[in-house]
Length: 210
Image (cartoon, rainbow, N blue to C red; front, side, top):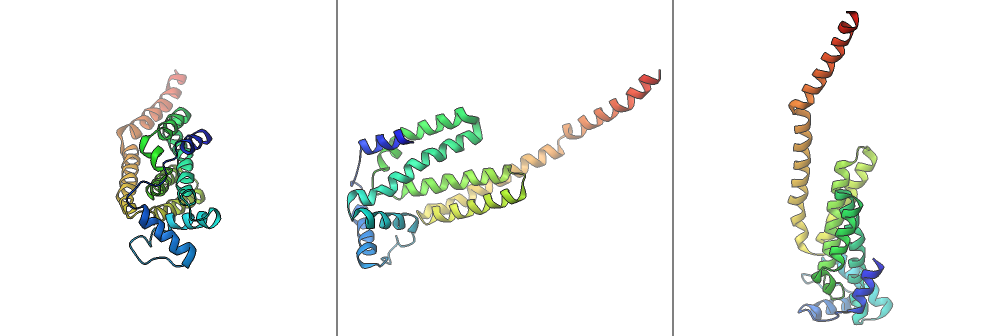
């Protein structure tokens, strides 16, 4: 993560997107006028709140506005490592983290004024918590993971309206998990093996009696 962050700083992108003027105007209104503009970006507080806080510390500069994107991008690499590790083990986690480290779009946008980085981070966190909740047997931990998934989904929506598309994705994952569990329960193997084991137990005394 430190290497990835260092490379992103070394190849700093800065301003360059069409919405930069709009985003900078929103942050300027928050920092100087203490007022959130009532436009279509007002709901995106997952992006503008850390950006405004950064600009309060570092000033209304390019670095101040871009810094939250860089932080989210760096944290996203650790998140993807955890994601890959859950699905494919430690090797899978390392490969997933390396792929994101050098992904051209993430590499460039991590140091630009883009709320997409924030959205991708909370989207990944949502799916990771959902997978963890479905695999967790302890009721308390499972409840906490579902709460974390719900909060992450909520924050992803408040970074970009595309967050609503996570609802069908989460529903599909839950349905697929339910179908797999149902198949394992109703599979012929689930009752054939215990039947064979029961017959084996019955036959052993008979053989021993001979």
